[in-house]
Image (cartoon, rainbow, N blue to C red; front, side, top):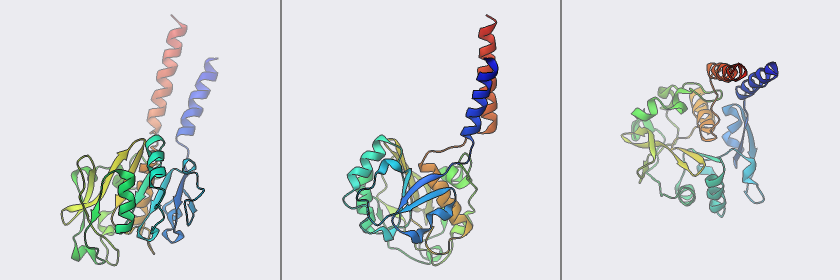
Length: 245
């Protein structure tokens, strides 16, 4: 019996650290969300007939147009009651209007620019962002550290956010203005990056940030092996203690 319990505990820990693939819903195959790694991407032109509960996250950018229109309430309700992450890269006013309905606040954007390092300001992490798992990769399935310098490249559309309310965490800024923000809605997380990450030929660090963001909002942290070992030892010790009392 004791061997059986130990076997079950070890099997459980092995299952917890297995590679995870998440299901991501997107409306534009040009995003190449699957290139972010460990992502099973489903591309649809409309959310009509889509069961949101079958997905771990939604990924959109400025090309999503009216993709969310008419489904804002359904997405919000799903996020409130189930883990349905939302990752948004560079967007326009149309998408932000839809996102505002989903998130319950109205983020706005500055005038956009392509050569953003010279026009709006460099990509700079805040104190919170410097230790955040989406940039360090720590604790995320397949997570890797992001080299911030490589996110500051020309011909990548970018704009900073305005009208960001209290309670929303600012992870990066551009010229001192909010550039990457994240927060919680019900049972879900959202992550807004006002930079093109998966548009065209993404570099390694853009792919890493997209990957980390997707796994962050889907809340799939990977327990450290040491944690599993301690769990096995602790429960085993308790079992043997009870046997000898």
